[in-house]
Image (tube, rainbow, N blue to C red; front, side, top):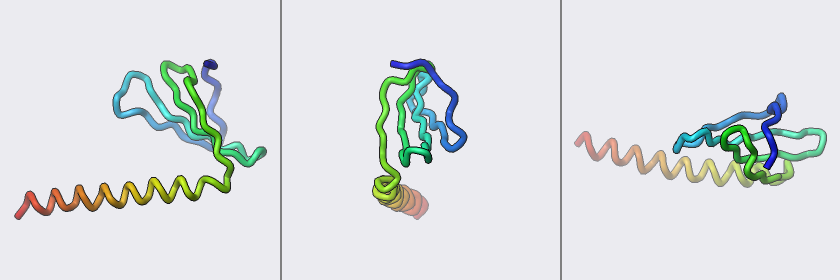
Length: 83
């Protein structure tokens, strides 16, 4: 495990819904053509996953599909509860 380093200029941090100082960092490394997804807890990196930039669209598609399905389910629940 490595200690926290500053996030590259191009990236983001997403906090875990469970709390407990857990986070997912997304960092773009344009010089090497990679996106690194890293899991953090208490400012310590506990694991990372590297994607080439060519693999990112498939990940985005998977996230978009899941979001679309979840949104439809949530919308159906709201519409069903108002009738």
